Image 1 (tube, one colour):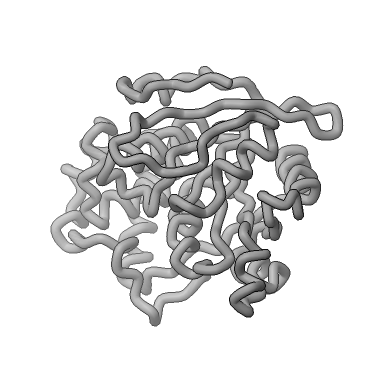
Image 2 (cartoon, helix red, strand yellow):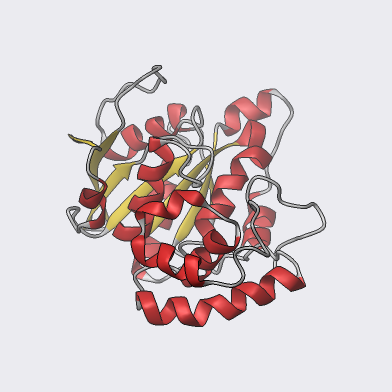
Length: 265
């Protein structure tokens, strides 16, 4: 197992990880590191320590004769990059463009965890939602219908109880299917309303020309319109933001205050 101390953000922009690449993201205490250990067979502390140095843990697993590289990203509640952990997770997803993005959620508090999943769905389509801790949820009388959730989100959903080994084969199988193209996720994007969607639509073509596929243009447009100051480290995006007439008209954060009357497309 290798650990990378994250001091230089440029490191995350280089292709330093073997393919196919699977990245694990999720809120703290969702069992993300337990999933990582179960997939790779590596041992890693699963707790949260105050002041812990931000590191990226990397391992591998084989499934159907394919060797997958797995990276366990720092636990985060969002990708707004208000902390080093969030910045690391966001930049890794943006610039390394994992072949499969695995978002780990806690079945006992699914609604809260899905906020991060929705943000990641704005960056990449190659996403699987893993609903972990289904055994703990069952003790509380909570049952998640994976088929319904998958239909609502437009992405595969796999239920697991990682500490007991439940659902791990199904998870590996779905990772392989998304990587191989046998399953093609089609995430349903959040609809921010007519006015903001129009602003997004006006920015997307310019962003497509500037980044040529290096960054998801819809995500970039949302970052500009929402006044996301965490993009200061992305010079090309900042330049477009500063030149955009939309910035002053739409300077507030979407992701922290998603209105209830705006649903999925």
